[in-house]
Image (cartoon, rainbow, N blue to C red; front, side, top):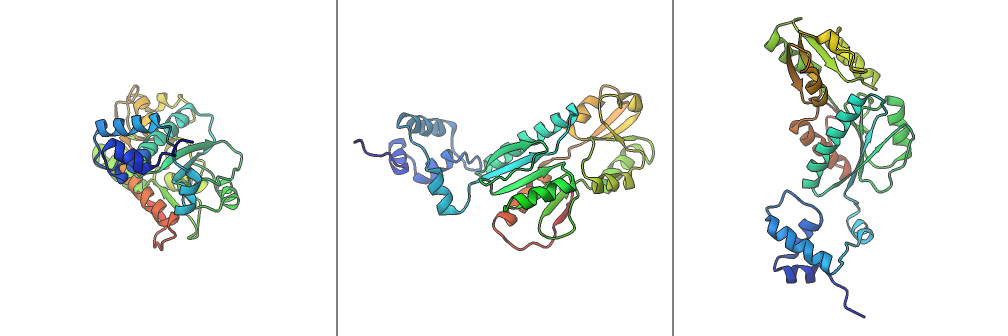
Length: 267
């Protein structure tokens, strides 16, 4: 029987450290490793048909290094497009942290036993709590305002900050505000408090309202579409680098069961 290849063997044949092989196998993009070295390691790994013992790794670390992104239900193509853009951004961001992203959606409550945490994007309060009862890993609400306790985290748009941007660029009441529909009733109340005339883009028909008007648009996908009709558009990236960093901070605290002061975060 041939000898079982180990990570040490891979490192020796590639002429690199064991840590470097581990970084490549775990898709760590926060390490300075040349593309040539990555390719060499992966070729050797493939040649020897080396596979990480996922079960052993999970047992030894107590983690799976998998984050689930659960997307709230919507038939709106603009909502789906924005959700996929957020998923793409989050995948790249988490990859650099050594984590994998899996995506789930729909209205059926599921148990994600292989996840270290679940990020719920644009879901309603009832569904979030049902998901919390079915799962024993940390849950974080993204672009939803759902909780009034310190068991979970919620991260959502600071609409007062958005208003200050719109007022500074266009002047008060000299622009329209457009948002994707929100499943969270509390968040909907929050945004309508700041923008009583806000337009929720339930489809493509909102173009008539913003035609030849200035517009502040929440979401990159929506912003690109609005540019076809509006006089001028300011697009607010609702999942920018600052928000991803804050989400990562919350994930790290929640996964490692650390103490935190603020569970309600507006950005």
